[in-house]
Amino acid sequence: MKRWAEKQVLSWKTASRRKPLIVRGARQVGKTWLVENILAGQFEIFIKIDLEKRRDLHVHFAGSLEPKTILSYLELAVGRIIPGKTLLFFDEIQACPRAIMALRYFYEQMPELHVVAAGSMLEFAFDKISIPVGRVQYLHMHPMTFYEYLLAMDKESMAQYVLISPAEVDKPIQQMILNELRSYFFVGGMPECIKTYRNTGSMVEAFQAQSEILDSYRDDFFKYMPRIDPICLDAVFLNVAKSIGEQLKYTRLNEGHSGQTNRKAFDLLARAKVIHKISACNPSGLPLGATANHKKFKASFLDIGLLQRLCQVPVELELQQENLLAMYRGKLAKQFIAQELIAWHDSNLFYWSRDARGSNAEVDYLIVCKGKIYPIEVKSGAGGSLKSLHLMLENYSNCPEGLVFYHGMYKNLSDQKLVFFPLYAIAGIGKE
Figure 1 (tube, rainbow, N blue to C red):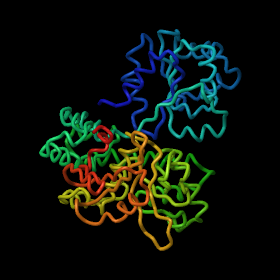
Figure 2 (cartoon, helix red, strand yellow; figure 1 turned 120 degrees about the vertical axis):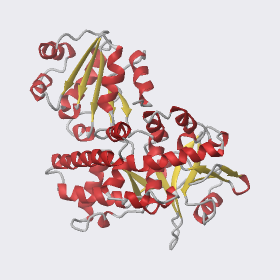
Figure 3 (spheres, rainbow, N blue to C red; figure 1 turned 90 degrees about the horizontal axis):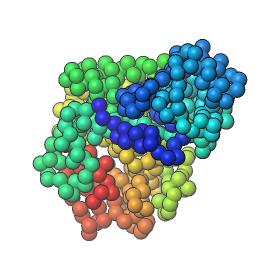
């Protein structure tokens, strides 16, 4: 398994301005694997402390947060910790919020010691402590991208074509990559699911791994009590997955609870990184977030594979669809584009929705590339209606052209200010 984040974590080791590193992301996206399999081998000594399992060690963070004091106690339990030779890894650090606070003092008083931490749901731990702003570095991890999936499936040559502009790729190769994307739509990007599919060749086995991950997420919901009703969390979790590509209202996410309660559940899931809020905004200038309307929003799910499993998509029927955009009424394609945009471009996604009364014009996504705003549409064919995209390009001259992702080959219609991309080609955007 190769991860794009490997370069970043190895660069951290030798950086002159290194700070304690916190690897963030939803559960089971590969945070611990990255530290244990990539970073640990760079050190003579590797010390891992799982703070969810080793709650007996929390007491050492309860008093003084002086690094020398903390290490003197930890060494009795885990062995010698030597700056310059040891990688000290706090896994599941959210289980001990004061350990997060201690990281600032490791930076200030013992910068020669390499300290890395990993955790999910860190925002909940941050509610209980003062965040060590400017004293730590963050590395955000996502599910494996389509590029990383291809590497894991021993298709390295194909993976390299994903990283370059499709304008430079022969059409038969573009078609081969689209065919491979079909499997990724259902296996998804969770490392355990990809590993299972690679080792067994069975989607059924991969689906079982997906179900186990979803069960673990739902088990986590009970950890939020009494902050929120886990039944409400589960309902919102499911309904967000079923509503990809649609504008959402909190009241409709779960009829059994109030809109305010549903909003609280939605926000908790977003903070846990299992869903992403996509707000409408005005693309008149940068930054996009400055004009965001947080009351008008859509959402994307953590992973396309988990989404299809949660929604119980009839795989045997959907795999017969020739066009990827036709699968699950286009929702899988829109989830894929959102997931890739978050991983490759920006974790803050936006879309455009016209404010005029009675208007239903909207464009799926907006991205910023080389200082310019580009609207993105996900469409089922090179023909068909692109009225909303044309309308936006007419109203916002600062947007140079529209990008259309579809089940087809690259084409540049400069006279219409449109560029059509094969669905897989998100990673190559901006590399023309």
